[in-house]
Every structure is written in C-alpha cells, then in structure tokens.
Length: 310
Image (cartoon, rainbow, N blue to C red; front, side):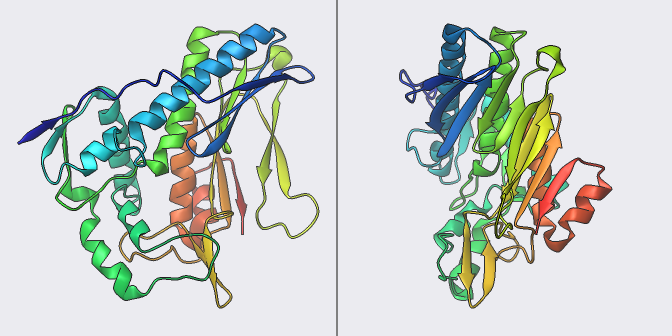
C-alpha cells in the first residue's frame, strides 16, 4: 500500500525580522530551526537589506515546516507515521534522503538518520543522567538505514523506525537560502549564518573578506573565539559545546554511535570545516567527529581547511 502525502504548505507568515545598519553592511536577524539566524548583506540600501532578510526568513521557515520532526504536518512526521507503508515523496525530499544515503555510505554506517530514535534514551542537557545499557539496547533494533527503500518518487521505512533530518537539515537550509539570494540579488555579497553554519554567496566588492568568529568551547579564559577570513564558500561546525552529559568526571558527547547506541569515544569538543558549500562542510565536520580521537588526522588526510578544538 502506498501513502500519498499532501503538499506541505509554505507558511504564509515568517518569523519577525530585524535589520540594522553596520559599518559597511546591513545585519538581518530572525529565529528559525531552533537557531539564531543572521544575514550579513553588503549593501547601503535598507530596503534591499530588508527584502533579502525577509526572503531568507520565509525560505528557512518553509524548510522547517516541511522537514521538522517536531511538526505533525511535516513530511518527516508523515513518513514516521506510515508504519511500513510506502510513501510518495517529491523531488526535494528525494534529494535530501539521497544525500542521507550518501552520508551513510561514506561513513560506513556511522552517519545514520534512523539513529534519532536513540533520543528516547538520551537527553543531552548537561546533567549526569547517563542511561543504563538496558534502556539503550532495545532501540538498536530500530536503527539501520540499509533497511529502507528509496526511489526518486517513493520511500519505505520499516515499521517502528523513524528518520530525523536534524543532522543535515540546517546546512541544507543555509545553502538553499544562499542560492535564493544569489538568484534574486546577484552582485550583492551575503553571509547566511544559521547558528554557526555559514555560506557566503559571492565575493565582496574590492575583494574584502568577511570576518567570522569560530567559538572555541575548550577555552578556559580570555578570548574564546577564533576569527577567520572567508571570501566565498561554506563553513560548518559540529561539536558538543551545548549538548553533553557529565558523569563522574567523564564527558558524554551527543555524537552517538548507531552501532552501540552510546557516544563516540573521545571526540573533539568541536570541529569546523571549510568547503565549497555549507552542506558539504557539515558532512565533513560530522564525519570527523564520528572518528573520535582520530578526527584531526582524518581532516588532515582529506586536505581540508579545518579547526579542531579538544
């Protein structure tokens, strides 16, 4: 039996935006996907800056409405409720799920969007509440992307399993917003920054760099950020600065191993990677975190521009 989903509506509203003038650019701000979102716009025209910010907010909210597992009317929630029935999907959903398949293959199964079910055992709230193995073990039966079936028009998820696009959704939204801005406002360099995941649409006038701060969660005093110059392309960060557990002196990262159901052993506190686009940078940062204590050597072997904090 095939379940046909109604088109997910584009929201008529969008989050309140604010636009303020800086030294040589405008800063647009709004909230979406549980993140503070910033749009840095190289223009002196306030109306252009507001238009770009509102377009960005609307597109970010569209993607959130469509793919958030927290919304009952989202594509993801409809898939998760299908209980083994084949679901008809659109082209955009197929592209995201196909990318998830690539992530699964490249990571040899470590990057698995069906592993979100582990949230039923883990809550990374900074406490010392590490779940017992007996609570984690039963959930492993519901993890395994290789058990799904994906075609360009249909997707089948076994009964009891779920998908969660949280590991790739925000980076995807950053790139989609950047593409929209570049198409509608060519010639205006813009930084799309959703909670530290970043894409620069094109180079600035006079080839000036944008100055971006990367948080160093391992710093104990003084300046806790590294300032980097970015001309074009993407940056993405993966880490446990705000999502972790601390029990008997041991820190438990929110980066979970889908084969064991427990956190990856000895990962860095954070990894930031530069790449052509934010989605690619996010994948590489996550793949590095999944290497645990070998994260830095993995990034060096790939010849990537990166920052690792341990």
